[in-house]
Length: 359
Image (cartoon, rainbow, N blue to C red; front, side):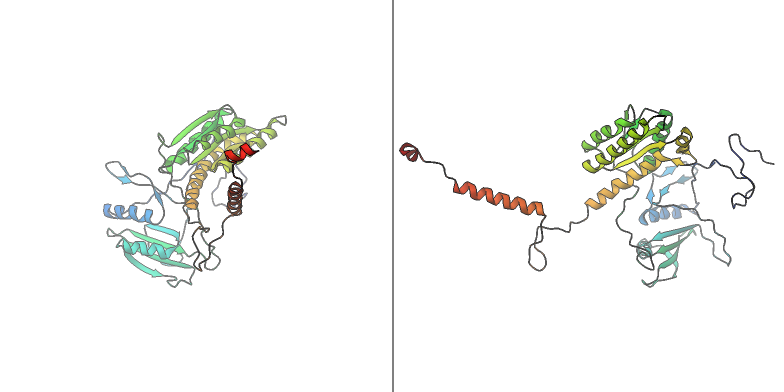
């Protein structure tokens, strides 16, 4: 019989619907890295070009002599374990994506061979699936969901997880450092996974406690050097009301700094009842909240850039029907005030020297 690892508690048989014999309260797997092996180097080169074209963010190529690899980060990832009840052709990689019509055009432009295009070529169908056969024999199955059809809403504008050529400031509290340092490690790891340069793109600023985080975050945001600010700290409830006061002020201060400076702020401050809760959220069974805050910062930095690059609906030029477009109320008021000042100045004339002598 397998021994129960120290520090873990065995749950009663049948307490969870799972085919394994033992259930443990603490999560053993901290992260999962999924990999696939292509059938030739030519297929590798083509696939590493196809995946970024479909929207996956690729990291730097790693060459180890006997093999080489490249990692890709999708915006949303899931592992599906599938068993086919009917005969089905085996493939090397299965992808489920949005916007399959654009994806298949990308595949065609790359000159890759499409082996099947069915399940809804017509735009009225909610999905479309097709296969791609690479020259070396690697097979890729692609299933796409059309947005806006049969209950799938529009995708809208959103940020991605590309951290290249962006700068991030991390404000880190020294109080409860044995927890906060784990949050910092997770945040830096997330930024590097997104393509940020640790030496030139990540600035760590340490403050005494969580109460000082908003002030430092605002100072960094006002410099205009950073695309996002990540706030990391840990607050544990004590016997007095001090915890509630600090939590409210830190939350308000970080939110106010983000709103008034226009720089995205990621909230990575733990507010826990017990030390065990904080440990679980610093890399154990509840994940690493520093890692999650860094991903949110990267996405919000890209979302801000995407929104700022959208064309404005209010233009100073004339509309298509020949009428001037509407301006803001503040702009109209400023024009009226300027015109009034100009008229008042024109009416008041300085007295001439002869007029002054007569008086």
